[in-house]
Amino acid sequence: MSTITVSNHPLIKHKISLLRDENTGTKDFRTLVSEIAMLMCYDALRDLPLELVSIKSPVAESMQPVLAGRKPAVVPILRAGLGMVGGILELLPSAKVGHIGLYRDEVTHEPHEYFCKLPDHIDERLVILPDPMLATGGSAVAAVDLIKKKGCKNIKFMCIIAAPEGLKVLKEAHPDIDIIVGCVDERLNERAYIVPGLGDAGDRIFGTL
Image (cartoon, rainbow, N blue to C red; front, side, top):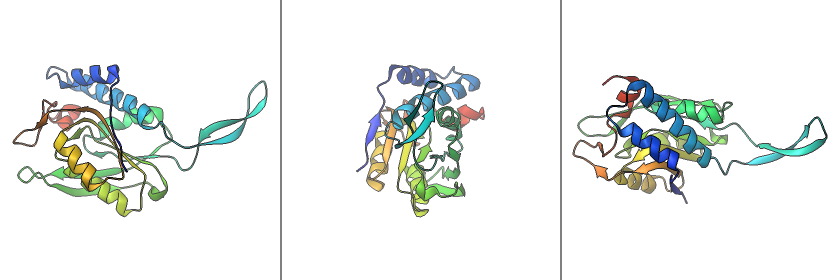
């Protein structure tokens, strides 16, 4: 059964408030997204498996814990998910990185795939799937579908802001994945934008307003 974890960390709350501000420029917005992703990732990875290995310090040799198994994979949903990758890699510099490209039809709001490149042995890795916004849930569901088709069973979806509608859709479609959320907002509007939200995350990250 999946878990939905909504952050209550004051730093994450503070930084999300700064993200919302329409006066926050591209440079600061990009930095904030990366910082929030790093803070969220710290909590999301509390259950990483460990194994004991022999380590020789200047004083003595002993058995000490290190991460076990294959390195996790970070697979952002293009393009906005790219903004979260740097912060995650600050904590997991050895993680493998893949990409999933999806665009949303402006009329139907349905996702369409245009690119998918995943690391080798993806079925043996924990996959962290970052996307700043979870609106209708369509893109998130489609991305998880793609990863599961490759045999992956250990998936954590991470978003900064979610709409209740999107959370419901993702949880019902994939009840076996963990969902990590910075903040749950009020609702979607008629254009399927999150309210109050922060606008289009991709446009604000890449300065294409």
